[in-house]
Image 1 (spheres, rainbow, N blue to C red):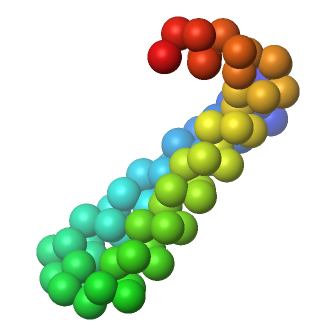
Image 2: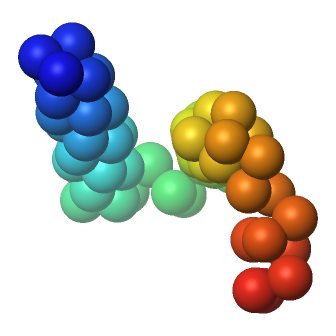
Length: 69
């Protein structure tokens, strides 16, 4: 259970760091550079999709999620 807790805490901290990085970019106005903003948004979507599918698919809950949404 120690590895499971460390993994969960590490994943949460990783996403907190990602959100801090996004906030820093918004504070300094990097959204004005379209190429940088679109590449960052694409990476964020891929990151969140990977995290979602990695969490849901191993237990076979995708059909339940699809029915609930």
